[in-house]
Image 1 (cartoon, rainbow, N blue to C red):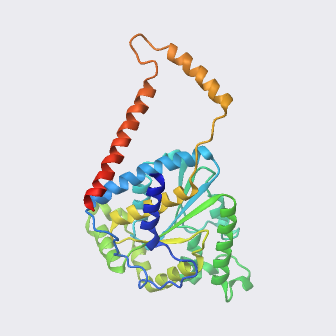
Image 2: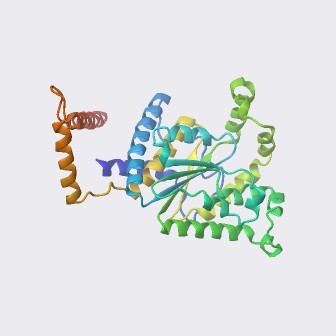
Image 3: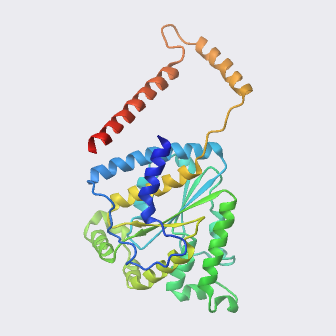
Length: 334
């Protein structure tokens, strides 16, 4: 059953993956309004809820195994839904195993180090999921669109010259490859919103009082650089989607669908890792059995000696019934 689920999810997310070596053009190659299948908003919410349940299970395994770390990279234009994606997709996981980092303009201390230094410092521990809400890719996006930022990075003159962006692409790829070899898995998501949908969301932030706090005048200023950002994003997708850390371009005009797609990409990555709970030795099992016997002997009169065993059995029956019903429903649709 798990293998079948994995296959389904892998097939669902494949159209969003940027094939390594592919030359990407935006918006021609990835439609921001694309929805791979018709579904109501409620149906999308139901699919997302089931996906979150799956993520919670795999996150628990990831933490227990304590071998791999996962880095979720979120990049997008303003109002594409990064914060909402984090809030909805990660709503069911254990907050102790997830860290979210948003990277603003670098501090004077950060400018005294290399440009990847501050991102290296915020990598998640093994067994954890780290979310970079904007990331090291800002160093080849906003820094490229606004050259004055590069001028303030204290680089020696030869390092600011021709070829800097190709060099940074190579450095980022090498850094991600090194971390992959150390047990990190990168899940890179570009939430691809259209210019018209961004305009609509900006107006919603202005016209709806409860959303006013989300809007700043700088958002409108950055919108004026739309074409420059699209070219920069296309270059990033073309040069930094690798076999070890591919990019996924998520259609973001439909928020519920975008959240389902983002959850599916993360679930697919966790299923690829396939973390397992540590095996307990025979000696430890014997000790557990002894303690269990002692606890069962303490049951009050009339109470189940082991109520958990009964609960687990009932849970297994319900799960089996759900799977049988789902299987029957699929046969009925054929």
